[in-house]
Length: 229
Image 1 (tube, rainbow, N blue to C red):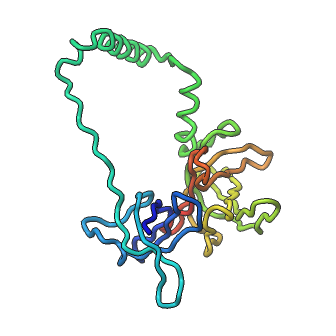
Image 2 (image 1 turned 90 degrees about the horizontal axis):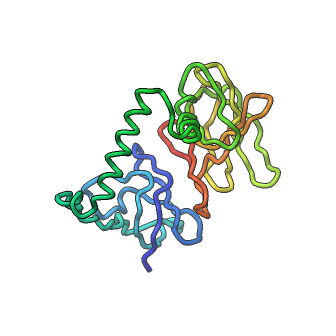
């Protein structure tokens, strides 16, 4: 029986990773030798089809893995669009002129959009400025302390990162959904993307994983070339 899934963890140097089924079920181990199409290396988030099998020790693994075909959309001919859709063409021209005006005048046509899109950029500045609670945030830092797991409710791996600005953040990584960073220790550099929540100690980053229900933007952690989500 053929299954469909997404490559949610991949170590290209060692040639193995894990597939998360699109339907319900546990993640499945996959090795580079099982990919039937050799024209390119696997990439994180590839959509795949595969068969279920077992290795010589009886463990489940993906076999006969293939990249899922994505239908290419036919390019739209631009010739005659303005003639066919005159009102849309005029609207696009006006929108472009307004954007140029706002750019040179320093006025933001939508302050709420300006604030939301600048959050991730501010996280990379040396001068730290915390975003609002609930906003997405990405960046990187050095592990200064590894804490014990939080086992109340969903289990979370916890550690403290120090950013280039000197600000510290608590990372709460849900290990009931995503894989744990097993070898994590002080001094390691970790990249992150998740949701920021403020607290008196500096802030917490959570949602560093995919959403099984597909209702939330997927977050992730990256350490030593491995992506955990």
